[in-house]
Image 1 (cartoon, rainbow, N blue to C red):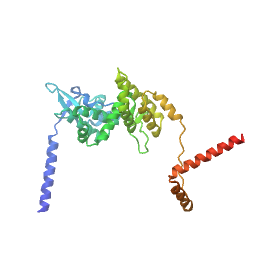
Image 2 (cartoon, rainbow, N blue to C red):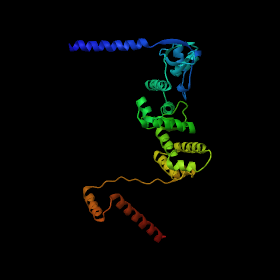
Image 3 (cartoon, rainbow, N blue to C red):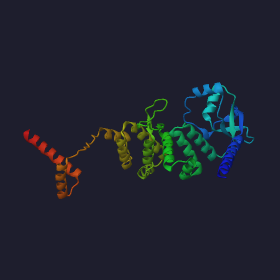
Length: 320
C-alpha cells in the first residue's frame, strides 16, 4: 500500500512537470521585433564571437524570455537572453525562439537575476545595477533580498559597487581564491574589490561627510562625486590597513585633500610587531613582576625597550 502511494505521488509529480513544460509557449520571433530595454541592460556584454559562431552552426538552443509591449503587442522586450540576441544579430539569424510572458518590472528583473545566477554570467556591477533597479521599484532592501534569496548585506554591497562605478567609472570586481582581484577582460589595473566599494560608499554617506557636503552650499552632488573619484583613484595604491586608515582620516576631516592624506599614509613608517615566547622558568619570573607592578606584559616590554633606547642614546651623546 505504501509503495502504491509513493508511485502515485511520483506519477503526479511527473505529470505536473510535464504539464508545466507543455505550457512553455515557444515562438520563433523576428529579431527586428525584439529590443533590449532598460531592464536588460548590461554594462559589458563580453566576447560574443564564440557564441555567435555556435549560433550560426546550430542555432539558438535556449529560448529567450520576452514580454510583449505596445498597444498591439507587436514588439517584445527581452527579459533574459540579451547575449543570445546580440550574438544572433552578429550571426545573421533572422528569427530566434522566445518564451513570451506577461510580466511586470519586478517579475522581469527577478527572472533576469535568476538567469544570471544559473549561468554565473553577471559581474558585481551588473548584479548591483539589477539590485538598484529592484530597490527603486520595491523601496525596501529586505524585500529585495528575500526576492533574490540573498542577504541584505549582499544586496547593499552590490548596490554600493554600482553607485561607486557610476561616480568614478572604476571597475568593481570579485576577488579570487587567493584574495587577489580578478581582472576584467581588458586587464585594467584600475579595479577595486567589493569590500573597497563598501568602505568608500559607507564613508561618503557618513554623518560627518554629509554634514561637510551640506555646508558647501550648491552642487552638493558634484562634490560628493568628486570625493568618490578622489578616494577611488588613491585606493589601488594602498594596502588593506592603509585603506582603513585613509577612510578614518577622511571622515575626521573631509576638507583635507585625499592625495595628501594618501602620501602621508604611504610615507609614514610602519610600526614593528614582535611575537616572542619564553621558557617556563623565565615565564614564572615575568608573571611575578607583572603581578607586583600590576601591568600587562605588552606595556611592560614597551617600557623596557623605551628605557633601553634612551640609555643607548644617552651613551652616544656622552661619547660624542
